[in-house]
Each structure stands twice: as structure tokens, then as C-alpha cells.
Image (cartoon, rainbow, N blue to C red; front, side, top):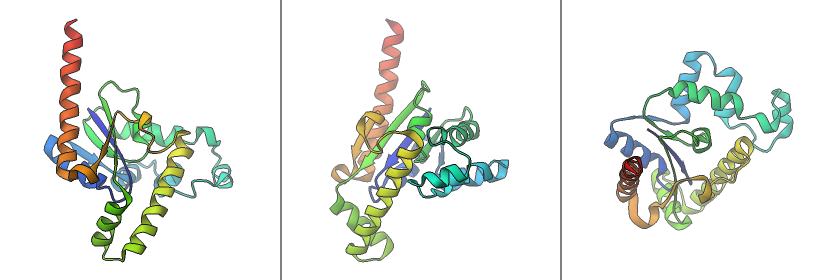
Length: 197
């Protein structure tokens, strides 16, 4: 089982991923530990721009790296699939909903929340003003959207790109984890029922 989590900044998506990984007893991969694993395997340099989120809208950067824009995702996506292998895991971000879309045991989730709740969360977590938190959220979400669009050609956060979309601001972090678990169990029941037909 591979669970992929996309998230708006400040929605608690990373915390949700950590709690879910602990609850299910599976490994969590995010940008940092995927990059560390790529370095250990010696494949980081050729996909460095993917992990460092180099200017997402810079065609000149893509050309300078010898990557055609429509094929930019091929190498990093292939590396992530190889690094994950056949282990059950949770992957935060990294266009993983697209990378694993055709895997039978893949579950894709997008976590969002209204801006006011995200501002309060980020301001408290980083000990900054709400004004600064709002600016940081807008910049981070913009960068994530551009990154996702550049590597996939799809709109980040579009519900059609995910199996489940949850508003953590409405139900809280703990209940969002439970909601994802309920969805996983519903998928298992549906699959078992269809196999008997």
C-alpha cells in the first residue's frame, strides 16, 4: 500500500502523514528523507532540481539542465519508484499522486484548510505575525503549485487528481487521520466484495 499526501501549507498534512505512518506501522517519506536516500544511492545529482524545487517556471533552467519540459518528471519519478520499491509507505508531496497513480494499492489524498486556520497554525508554529504567516503560506502554496504543474502538467490541488480530499480545518488533525483510515478500510471492503462477484 502506498499512500500519497498532497497538502496546502499550514493544513497539517505533514503531521497527518506522520500520525498515519505511526498508526499503520509503515515508513514515511518526505522531501528531505527522499533526498537523503537519493544521495546515499548516488542518484541525487541528476535529479537535484526536483528535490531543491528550482525555479518552477524557468524554462531556461530546464533547458540548461538538458531536460525537455514535458519530460522533466521522467528521471525523478523513476528514481522515487525505485527507492520505494515494493514496501508499504506514505509519501508527502513530490508529485507522488501522479507517480503512483496506476498502482493498484495506491491511495492519494489532498489535505486543505481555509486560509484563516492555516495562518493561525503557521503563525503559532513559527512564532511569527499572522501577516508574515499569510505571506509565507501564499508563497509556499504558489511554489508547490508551480512545481507540481511543471512536473506533471496537472493543477495542484485539483480534486480530480486525488482519490480523497479532506478539509483538516473543519475536522481537525486527529479526525482527518481517522477519515483516511476509514477510506482505506472502505477500499479494502469494496475490493473484497468485487472479487467475490
